Length: 143
Image 1: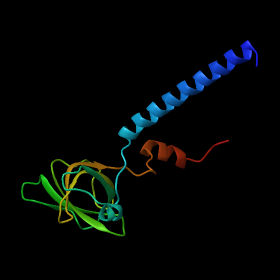
Image 2: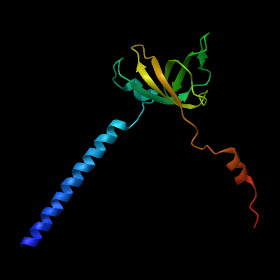
Image 3: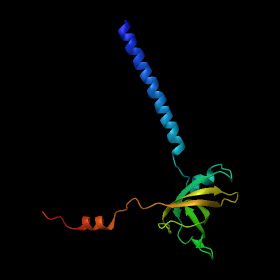
């Protein structure tokens, strides 16, 4: 191997090491920012501590929403249509929150398998389409 080939080989090796380090750092940073959630079935099978902050996702069970007299504290049930978990939340719910709607809650699971939420996020339907666009799509095409 001559001198020129050695330099090229060293340059390629340095480039590969640099790319590997960059990819490792990117993956490490993304690991900390991924917002995954447990479904009720997964959460009941997982080993968690009562002080551990968890994200619970699923659907609001029909007929399960109950407000207290003040209107700020609410109890509802999150289901994945296999298992249910009762959730209590003290605060203002998002506008999209309703029965049958997909939600993601952040909070703690108590020893009694009750979920105390600190935050409730309502997910919109993946089939969402603005009304104006839906009307335009329903109009016949004139050629």
